[in-house]
Image (cartoon, rainbow, N blue to C red; front, side):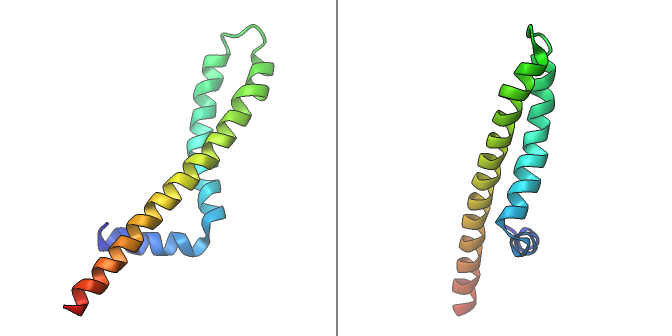
Length: 91
């Protein structure tokens, strides 16, 4: 993680995990996947039923998992970066 990335992450983490998961996971990833799966679902016999009973819940759940996964992975990188900065300044 670079200093610029760490500064950006510091600002992101101040807004909180809930905001991050909603924006990055559900809205960004989930919406993109929902649009893709909706286009694929138009081939089904009852596309609207399939879209709202399968695609929408799947994309929301997947978006939450994606958001949480990227949050914790970036948080891990950020803490490693801070520890490295502390060790470098101590020497």
